[in-house]
Image 1 (cartoon, each protein chain N blue to C red):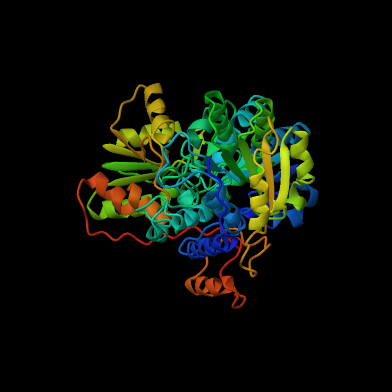
Image 2: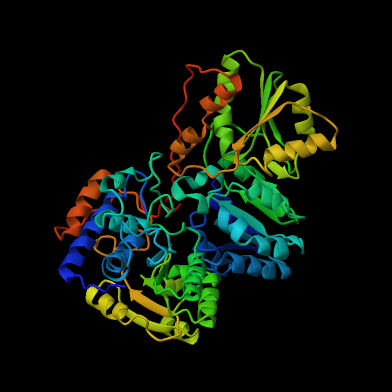
Length: 312
Length: 287
């Protein structure tokens, strides 16, 4: 099932749902005809869209709102904080092309601080699916939940079969004693490749798909860092405020120390190009991730990375 | 501040070459072709005939300023830069390459770009700041901000008009590329803008509405700068999205285009009036 199919089905079954967009229709192209007046396009007005979503929520609606991640989280930030966060309204943010997925657009469109911003808002919940299957698994629970939510939309496909989603729980794909990779979102795809390479080099490797970044699965983080000699936090986000920060906060809270290395963007925006080039240039292909952990180069095979297509 | 009048046929020849550059950039990842083609004549006119901007004065505080706020029409700007000697022509081949800085939105790694854009409704206010400083210093330079009509959805555009009026910024010109479309559909079907002339007039601006593809009309309008003492200048340029390529003109589904090599070849011929192109590449690629 696709994102659009799930959203259509959910909204048709429950008339509290309103689908909104600030003229970003890539994910909801067929919905206007199906929902009629319960589809609202406010034009390129992210702030007004969030304010209007609050008004709709006051009347008992559950607005699912769409815009590019950078404009949803940054242009409309104060509206999200003040109109969704303070009154704790069930406004559901679906953010398009977060992180590396903005490929050739440039820094204006790079949402690589969105996790940090959104998790800093009281009442807000934050999620980042590893692929389309993970996305479609998590959304019913998120949309049912009474709090505002932020989801990094990721409709890419992987071969991985995910376990059922539970809000606040990570997906423990594998456990390892030498190294464990903690990740979320788009880079899960590359983490799977890295894990295979590391295993072939004889390491015992763990992989955790965080999924739910707020609330976060503290137990999973504590266990992984305790049972593994080395932990990697892997994310297409600035190192500040994202998963590395979350792990640091959890360890400190529980008086635990661990060797944790962040793989993230370090205080600079990424070089704009098509996604496969971006990953290679920034050092985030599965092979590059594995070789950084190993400290040496391998002859491992890096599968081709597909270029995102948002079309119909 | 020199005022030259470039022969119309020379402007047309440059604009044609700029359109060729745009078409050539619409493959291997693609670009925002429709919006670039609607703005091409405007941009060519302003740099060729109106603005005091040239390769030797890019850092001169007395130069004129052009801010491209809609941003995704940057292929038209780079094409113009290439034709006017501001950017080496062979660099246009580096579109989306890691070895250059030519991608879907403007950035200041390219000399001549005054400010990056891509997030709509930012540069009207940045342009105000520049225009204010020129006023404070008693300068004569002109400041232009090109905005898309869809961009006018953003409230900050209208805040900027209020502030420009309050500070009597008659050295500032907002140019609206009125191609009648926003990303997915006609503006009047989503968030109607008309009567646009009256809206800006009510905000205190001196407004001219012209055919944005007519170099005569562009010349006549901009020759009247400043339109009225103490008033923000606004030029609403009526344009056609996709102008020059009938097979994509005014088509809602041809905004961001990633054409294949054969289509590019065919579109280049279509630009020269040879035939219409049978487009088979996917439509509605939206990023």
